[in-house]
Length: 351
Image (cartoon, rainbow, N blue to C red; front, side):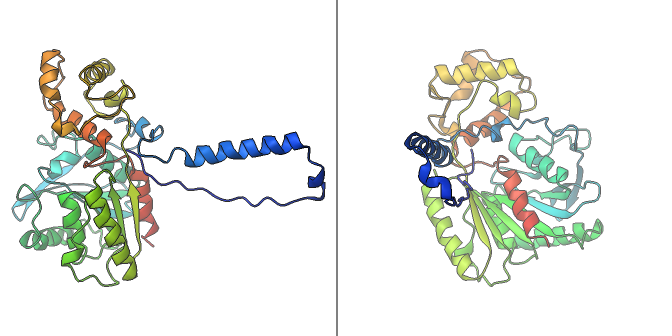
C-alpha cells in the first residue's frame, strides 16, 4: 500500500538571447525529455502503484536503533503496555481495532508473554521509539471500543500514566485504526492532543460538537473502500470549515513478491516466504503481477497451506500472514507503510 500523494514542483524556464538559434533537433529532444519527466511524475499515480521504497522496510530494520522492551500494567479493568525511549520528545497513544489488543504492538518476550507482535503494529511502535516518542497502548474491554464509559476510563489512564512518568510537558498525540480510529476521534474532544491520526476510519464527527480547538487531524485511509472515502471527504471539508488543520494519505494496493513476507514478518524465512508466494500464485489468490485477487479474509488460504504441507515456525504466524495479505489488498487494515508521513504530521504540530 502506498500513499497516493505526489509532490512536484514547477520550474520556470527563462529565455536567453541565444534561444532563437537553438536547432530544431535540440528543441525536439527537449520536448521528448519533458514528456518523459511528466510521465514519470504523473504516470505512476494510479490504483496499482508499486511501493518500491516502502515495502523494502524490513521487520528487523531497527535492530541497530531501538528494541522492543515493554512494561505491562493492569489498571481500571484493562491492560496497558508502554515503552519510553531515552530523552523522549513526545507521547503517542495507540488504539487498536476490533478484535485487537495492546499486546499486538509488542513482540512476545519474558516481560510480555502474551504479546503477539503483529507486523504492522510492531513497526509503528519501533518507528515511534526511533523518533523518540514514548508509546502507550491500552486494550479495549470488549471486542471493539465503546464511546461512553470507556472514553472516561481511558482518558483517566492516559492522564495518570503521563503524570506518573513525568511526561506532562511533552506533546501528546494519538493514532487509532478502525474502531480505534473512531475512539481516538472522540477522545480528542476530551484530551489535549497536539494532533491525531485516524486510520481506516472516518471518525465520529457527525455525533460531536466540533470547535476550532479540536486537534489537527490526519486521515490515513484506503480508497478501495469507497463508502468510507466519501465520508472522509465530507469530514475533511467540515473540519476545514471549522478552521482545523486536516490532511489525508490515500493507501493503495501493491503486489506481493517472493520475499515480501520474509521481509515483514519475524519467523517467516525466505524459503517459506517463497513457498507461500508460489502457493498464492498457483491457487489464483494473486495474479501474475503479484496483486491480491480478493480480500485476504475471503480466501481459504489456510486450508491450502495444509494441503501443500507448508509448515510454519509458529501456528500463530497465520495471523501475521493474514494481516500482510489484507494490507496488500488495501481495503481495511492497519498499516505502517506510511508511518514516516504520519510522524512528520505529528512533529509538524508539536511546536
